[in-house]
Length: 416
Image 1 (cartoon, rainbow, N blue to C red):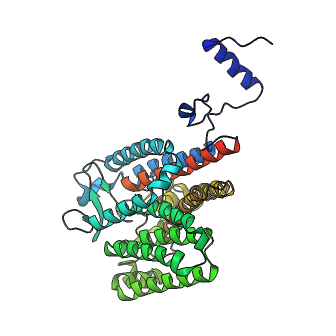
Image 2 (image 1 turned 180 degrees about the horizontal axis):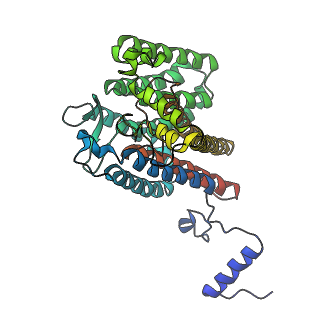
Image 3 (image 1 turned 90 degrees about the horizontal axis):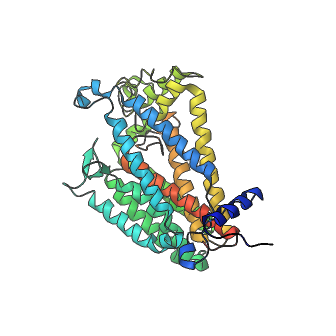
């Protein structure tokens, strides 16, 4: 058999031969350093398309929910496209950040995990300093950066997922010990919780608690010890609600939102969210035809975007969004389990922690919109308006795609 010619002609013939034989060219990120021919392994394209679809629908719905805001005196200096254009900018930055993240090996993230957690703690402290942290609606959660406001709690979610995964990997031999394995992680969670409650940001604390506790459970912590930690966490939440008149009032309003005092007060958002879902019926009023976004439902483009989707796209539209998020979270967990099966514990626990983040925050946001949970200031991942939220969410999902890429590389006989 004669040798294939060199140069571009030979390369073209070899590629044609591979395609004809049904082979898929594979690329290794380490090919340049190892001297081996470049081979592309790819990643889960369906997951990437679902993510892109949710972001695209979010762009449309943020524009629809915010186009009438300049009619309000509060936003009278804004143009109708103000929030949409800023959201487009955030999505653009998120895509760039995701592409950069996709090129970073997981071994690098593993080394950076403790330092990323320290950085998140420093930023959570920094945001509480008057003159640095920006106060919006009586909460000090943002650090102004000129073109956008950065929310340290979003970085803390990613940092906690990676730190908890790194911590459990280092503590595998003593994971049955409360003092050596569980207590240090509980202290770290308590410090983060105190900083978040000082802002206050109960919603972010709940998500971070879900991430850290979930990773401890998936990492194999003793069931009895885990149950004790859950009990302590629930007791702490009950204590916070008991001593805070604001949070206690939200709970009572949630239990009876249609009472006149509640409907005109702390349950105002909830009642108008339910009205929006009721108006949507099965197929919705049509894109752009929402009435609740006309200054009846506050924060319609952020925390209550799902209510506008329900009013304009109906049960069908909401159902599609729920199925898309369910499939995405399930796929993230599959990727994480596959990494653990390949003896890549840090990557597997990180992916599952990100899955807990996406699933937990989505569940809380949807529960609040539908009146199943008390009102919390949490956005709908990938869809709601918000700069740092969309950027850090895309970075986290890019980490999952990187884990999937390295899994595929190993399964094809290469190195991650």
